[in-house]
Image (cartoon, rainbow, N blue to C red; front, side, top):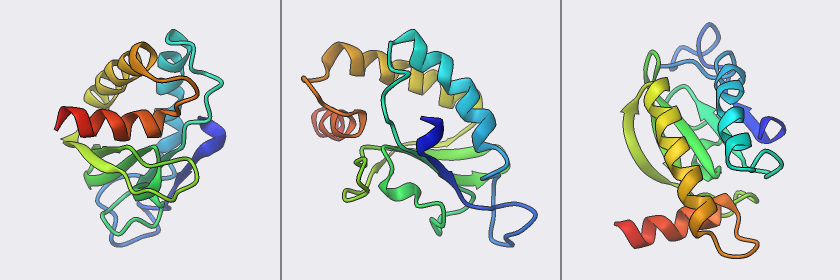
Length: 134
């Protein structure tokens, strides 16, 4: 996941930022990695992108997992994009802090491991899952 992560510059550089981007994403990825290990997903090439505002400079709209800053320490969580960036993701949760991000991803990774189809990526599963649950 770490090698497939991208973030915008956000605070200290961008006047449009509402939340952290490149300074926070490595910390968040470090906290997500144990969840990936828990479910045997550490070697999965899941794309994760973060942007500090809705403008999307970190290309969060086409990641498998995307975060869009809404306020300091708060993000909208988007899922369902694809690894190639050819499908846009969908907002899954609004304005959540780190603890809720980690709890939500823990739940999603668990569901993914249980219900994914053979060779189905996290983004493809999330897209299908959103179609079923909404």
